[in-house]
Image (cartoon, rainbow, N blue to C red; front, side):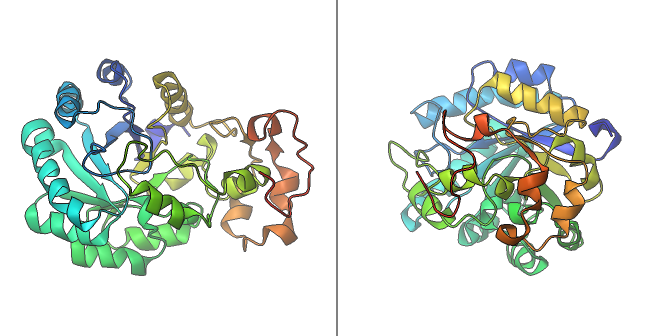
Length: 328
């Protein structure tokens, strides 16, 4: 089913490319919003910073983007998706005010993972559209209700761990919020290093967001941990009526790569992961949706998927090597 036959709209990453506003104007069909980081001098957002070092220069660049968004009815979702330290909070609130008043006006929404920051933003900006970042790991109606009842969020980007738990997604949506979902970030499900990654990413320094995932080598040897959560284009239509925004990962990739992913998810026919790391069998979705995640015992995904080991592993590494330990 082509994406146009669903109610789902895409959330595209802003990658700081000077060509982005003009490119977006030509590629905004079936797009609902663009998400972009707050300036790294204000707070970190779990990805390397590719933009200008001066916050004022960054706002100037965003002023070029805003008219394109407005002309095509798109939103601007500013991401603040890590812990914000106490001494940073006043600066974050001030910068959100500048982005609203000087750049995006009614187009602005803000995604947060820090619960207290969400409360502070709601108190300061009663009418601001707030959303919850996937980093907050909202994986149940109970967790969602904290944000809905106490912060007044209008949308939740669900935990990637429940991407294929359709009953849980529906229960969260039934709370009266819009639902977003990250489609394709190549992280492993239930990553054990997420706490250290988030803590280091919260350090707003010269290399903000540049730390790698410490479980990356483990996951690349067991890519079924990716397949349990990432959504191939051909299955996106299954979320029609459950999610409102499908979010493409890509703040640090090229505009050409974003365009390729965009075309794949708009067509919604390919069973290949957009990073070309595997091809998913057509019956895999239902098996994964109902499985108990006991991969070492089951091994169905390991044997049934077409894994592209040349894309997953370093050159010359044997995909059949012992997977009982992390090897690098």
